[in-house]
Image (cartoon, helix red, strand yellow):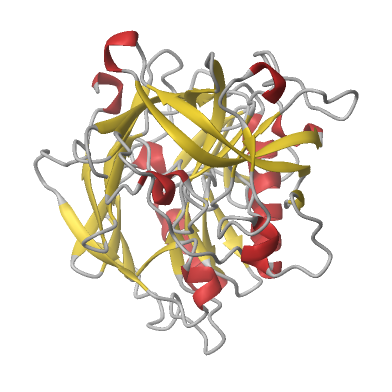
Length: 423
């Protein structure tokens, strides 16, 4: 589930896939009412979980929105012969995994057949002394190689690690196959991942798809939540680039806690503006503490942006000062803190200025429909108040209609406003 984070920090030596090709994957989001409340629940649990815790051609993966969950699913195929599988695309974690037969009663519902390693000629169990072994990487005293048991914020999955051939591309003409990808073969999982067949970690750790492909950059353009028909594309490798106008770039930053830095893409957010009004967020709101907590990172697997209380209260007050509609308790319907009651279901929300996130070296413009959301007749601020003092997170709702490039070799994030439905 893209709104989840693994409770175990995995640290292992990065290995490049020999002859790895670039990857192209389409992204699709799925969402059905009332997805907001469920997305908020998962985001809150995800934050709690964190407290415990290329050479060659471009590879592309078709990606669609999961309209039931506010998540983005990428399509890829596993094994020989290849079996297609939709997986949650998550830049906030590293492990790649899918449900595997036999699964019995402990698997969640999925639309595609279960992957069965016995039916593939290219599957092999991962040796326990592999640098990508979870037991070896995490130094877990209770870990029984080659098995794993992952507990997430709102779910869990367990199985064994293996290696397999993964095939990417939306048509035979642009298919790319990469051998020896290390992944998790789960024989038991909770029902929290319904709608997918697993998860693909795109984080900075050695187990992620990005690291295993040896990709020095990747990009995506997330289609808007209101668009239920279009798909967007995740590109990993040389063709991942930004040719848009108005491109801004900001460097990744390093947490004092190297275990966290191994996974998350941290950014330096210095202030926030609403229209022409600078909110004067406290200078240390997004700073790291001495033990590595705090900061802000970008995450395709979290739905709504969460801000530490010192920043959230400034944003909330600014929105409240611009809207003359009566406030209403939307916690039951949406789980969001600030909601306004519209006079009728046919009433259009008032115009609002864009929000601007001031990063080190670049400003990200967030239009009103990417920070406000209409749900169940309520018009709400689509952000969460992170009161536990942990990291702030830039979620995928605020990333919609944004072309985003992660340049690993240059240690920068670049972005530009775009119409992602036309990509």
